[in-house]
Length: 370
Image (cartoon, rainbow, N blue to C red; front, top):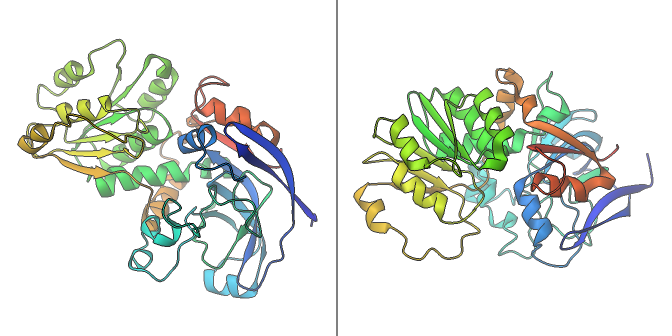
């Protein structure tokens, strides 16, 4: 095994360097993951352009790899062995709190990098923290005792398995938070990785009507949305989205609105409020980037008896269901895995996912050994 590990390190806003790190020692309760695919998502685009600090970081939290070395205790406790293809969640949780016992690692204080300076989370932890390999934009990743692992089902390629994170978000946000089910009517705002994953999961759940909105630059993505199960797509720059939704639903509105615009402002939220049915709809929002919301229509929300829930990460169960969805091959999910890039092209890959590099990228796979 090599003595050095190559990794792409974010050194500042929009800056990446290829650096070498020492191959770590693997104690009995840890393991080493040889990276196969690191997915690049919208949050990577934001963190790359506006990092929370200038501390160098190996990004990459959508990781698929093969266990290259497993300590005896790690293998015994986790039930995985060398050679297994796995998906490690990006949460490295405490394993002791209420949230961890519920499989809701996203809420564990041990993973909350915003409030806990000692939190370790893949793709966010400083590279200066030993043993350094805390991100998937590298040839190897260190797996400590509290790694949360999922087995990739047989027949699922690493590239398709790389979709598991957005697909798990799809399960969590649409099924668990939005309660989408048989005969539901759904509006999905934004046809990126998250929105297309929501489309698949809502279709699988038996939704009677799925409407996906996007902008003019999303033409290719909207076509993929139709392939994956959307009944209607709307270009909000060429059509009045609310009028079109009312027309499609016979004036009733939809049961559930899933905001997958990644905090693109208050307009999608306001549209969601109006597009929901007259009484009792559910709005699932991504609002972490919306710091202020002047004149929020609370009276309208109250009168329409709208339930608002937050879209934030995924649970253990959501990951397992997402992997089963990938293994079912019921949907042509390869249409989402559109592009792959090598380690030296991390900058281009991230910018392309953000719409500023290679055109029509939906989900990009970083192949660290390419």
